[in-house]
Image (cartoon, rainbow, N blue to C red; front, side):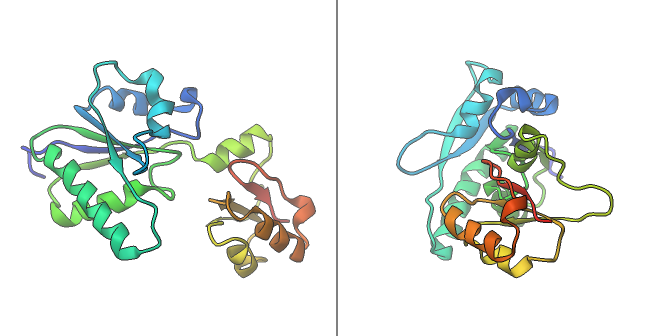
Length: 212
């Protein structure tokens, strides 16, 4: 660890309710010198910042990093590296820096790509990950639906390719959570019906469901 560098904090801000941020997340948000968050190239809005806004000082130094949604892996890697270098420049000046992310900081998060690059470029930078409540846990809580009981297993997977993952893993676990489902609801519903699971499934922004 290089004592002259700041610490990089990944902070999960939870599923959307500002009251669901952890006490540690709030404390670290107000501890750091610079707060970064992801925004699209089209605008400078960050939902993660808006969720955390009630806990952020009016004097906070908040900066947006643009992450273009692309299917080109080289383009995405280049943009991740550019943004990682922006963060590293602040850390190497001795500043403590946070990156805010929706849900949990290490579950389908841009932060995961950033820390991989930072660890490669400067292994001496200390990194601390502050977990947040992921969307599927908030969804299950809203529906008062236990996700696993007894000796059951739970599979968490992406719905970004529609029902493909569900068809692949059907029967591997008693309970399945599909995240990132927003563009493929119909195909996912079709896959559930094909597996005879539609009746026992529940839909929610977190896409949590029993697959018994």
